[in-house]
Image (tube, rainbow, N blue to C red; front, side):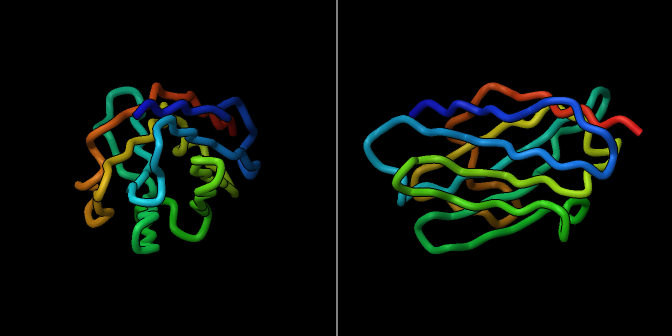
Length: 123
């Protein structure tokens, strides 16, 4: 499986962006897919995860209420709608996936990784 992340860019604080993660491969409905981010000098942080197999969705505490994850199984694409963006959201965002994975603690989505997409939020 290959993951292709896109949608990053520069935006002012309070603005919105939508990231996409498109997967190759024959199946998608049995994958858990999520987003991580890493800012310069900081550890990688789990942002959001969706499990296509059971519908589980989780969010990191810092993005709850502002970000929304969704999945289009037919298009094999997961979206991350990011609203009310803050300068603290500036980071490289990575999508990751695992077949028969799980979202709990963002620990079950480590099998496949996409390239990063940079999100820059200015004040």
